[in-house]
Image 1 (cartoon, rainbow, N blue to C red):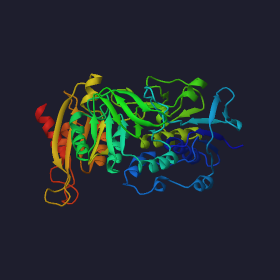
Image 2: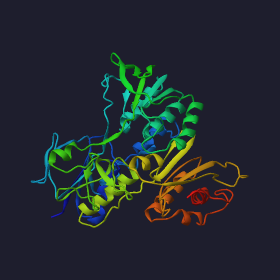
Image 3: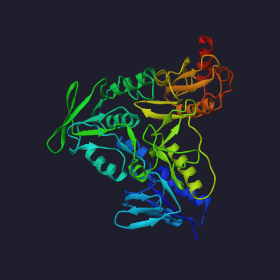
Image 4: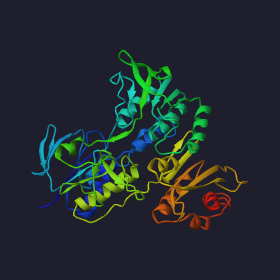
Amino acid sequence: MSRRVVVVGGGAAGMGAAGGIKAADPNAEVVVYTGFDDVAYSPCGIPYVHGKEIDDFQRLFLASKQAYVDAGIDVHYNSEVTSVDLTRKVAYVAGAGEISWDALVLATGFNYADPGVPGGTLGGLYYVKNIREAMEWDKVLDTVGQAVVVQASPLGVEMVTALAHRGIETHLVDPSPWPMSEIADPDIMAPVEDSWRELGVKVHFNTTLEAFLGTDEVRAVQTSEGEIPAQLAVICTHKEPNNALGIAAGLEVGSTGGFIVDERMATSAPGVFAAGDCTEIPNGLTGVPLQGLTGSHAYAQGKTAGINAGGGSRTYSAVYVPWGTAAGKWIIGGASFGETTATALGVPFVVGSAQGISRARYYPGVKPVKVKLLAEPDSLRLIGAQMVGGEGIKERADFLAMAVKFGFTLGDLARMENVYSPAIGALNEPIVVAAQNGLDAA
């Protein structure tokens, strides 16, 4: 009799898990439940369709529904799993009754934190998540003259840029002193703020959201600075783990609210795995649990959970978190943590930074690149990096995350080889210069 594995959630983690199960056991019966109309699209691409960098939402779909049928993955759309009985190994599906399982993967994703102010049920409040809803909201954007983005999270940063590109008068309201303050340092974000102002964006930092105003539809946003007229408010609050189903079943959660998992993505219950935004994963340097990482993390976690749920063997390591995004006219990124986070954690560090260029200075299209490296004071082992530039940030972030993971020092980086070719790389690699400056300052 074939093994049945039930997956709850159809995002990157859920569909990664479904593929992992089939890879481990091609004969397994894989049943996926999602509350949405679709699976396996890229919600991360939604802001770029709104901003007209991408011309069609259809480009965000990774595969057709028939492709999953052909792969032997039974996807149930618009289906809500209401509860799970770990003792009986049964999931309850609204309108469909019970389904038994030999293994279970929870990939239930996240919910946006409730803004917690009056007017939260008004029309015109947009939570960027579901692609079908995004298609409808995109039509609304054609009628919007003024919009407010609530909080400068990574999504908030992307939506500010998208709305400005769309020609909408855009306001950003955030209680912190600079955008993405939990992740990025102020010197990295300063060029982004400048480019927003060039686009006409009005930023309101150190500003508290107090209420959404209106009768049926939002007409304004009340803040500690005053009232901002708006026909749309985009809610980009912190991502919280969607953990209610697992908590009700008795699964253990950690300090972030995410499910506690081991290196196999196994939860506290036998035969139950979890992956993606509903879990927490330790930082490789500090062991501090992290939740709400990127889609690539979710997919890799899902693949690991699926392979193990299917009877195979794979492990997922602690993370060093390469990250990056487009912001205004710049690209920002980094690895592990920056000065702000290190200071908050009480981690001592020395800094090496450099302002460099992405190509030879005489080659057309050359862009600036700022690199900042953090290292342990005595060993000079790399512990973090942050960057802002016009190109090449993603590749450097990936490399620097591996450098942190494998214990590279500022000395190693100062002596590293680098590609020099006028069209793609400058003679003096900014990472090398930043590392040398860090050695000089240590």
